[in-house]
Amino acid sequence: MPLAFRTRHRLTHAREFQAVYAARCRKSAGPLNVLALPNDRAQPRLGLSVGRKVGKAHDRVAVKRAVREAFRHVQHDLPAWASGSASGRYDYVVQVRPHEPLAAEEYQRLLLELARACHGVWARRLAKEGGG
Image (tube, rainbow, N blue to C red):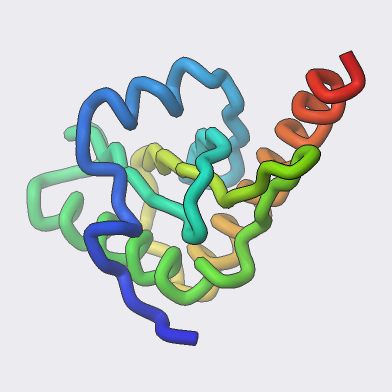
């Protein structure tokens, strides 16, 4: 499987970010907050939110690059959802808090851990909606 990170793997519009924020599924660990929302696509998508508190522009760019690279490596291991006949992956928004840079493997581990935690929340929500 290719480990690409193309435009189709990104959240690109403010309305896409707002939809993920509005879903109110947030999990945190270490310097990362991950918000998730099920989508109907074949691949997960990533949006990044790195505020000025993280550091100067070059520091923020380095963190974004590290998180994108981690996402690129774990994208095929991220959970998928299914409810009835519908299925898909998730849209993720990763918020980064100020921290010392981590190793690439640590970003990957955190992304997987938080994505699985969000998947657990959505699995319960979708089961509740389906079981009505």
